[in-house]
Length: 119
Image (cartoon, rainbow, N blue to C red):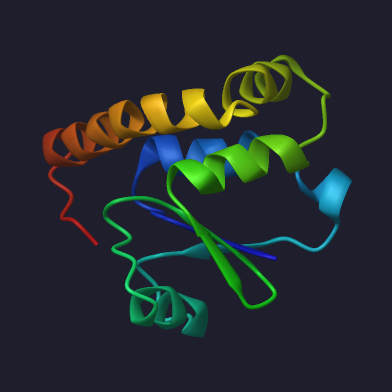
């Protein structure tokens, strides 16, 4: 399992650091979408724009954006306040779809304020 996220986004980096997947899933590789890792090319070739969201690659399946956050919430352990809140909010597919665009807008605004370019 690989999570492709924006390593220059402070929110994205914090999120993948705090979500406790390794305890539940064991093998998780965090991949910076700005790197030349082969999975980044795979996600792009599948038609996904990594400026629009993070991706979860499980076997041959790519889960993107709101669906990715939803899946990660279902896979994370219930330990810690962050993970419990994450599971409470994003275990709902509807809430994930409603809130994800807001999170993405916050990410984009933060990158602009920090002077960082899109991926």
